Length: 142
Image 1 (cartoon, rainbow, N blue to C red):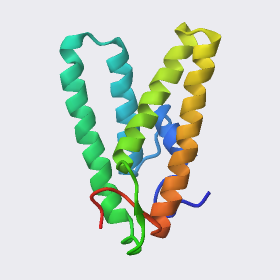
Image 2: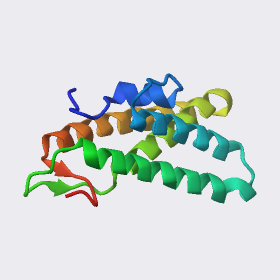
Image 3: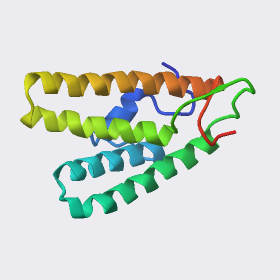
């Protein structure tokens, strides 16, 4: 699917898995968000606030980058319920959970984790195409 200026879902998923392509700030942030979610899965309660603050900063970085990459949305474009940074953060979270499930989950939990990631990746691709075409806008974007 053509997502315009935004990376396609396979590129985001590769970045989340650590296969980082240089030069794209959103993909770098996706990679870093996944690493933070992996830390969160194994961290004690005392480091959660620090991890979440770092995640919030990366989400803001993505949202700022997206704002300059996209053309203005059409006047009648519907607003999406969350920012692109929030979507990428969830993809990073689902990636971390899916890989953790490989080692420790039941077969059903493993299937569920990978299914959630696959569905979100398709949703990301659809959203990226819609915002690139100007028929959907992101919260906070004009």
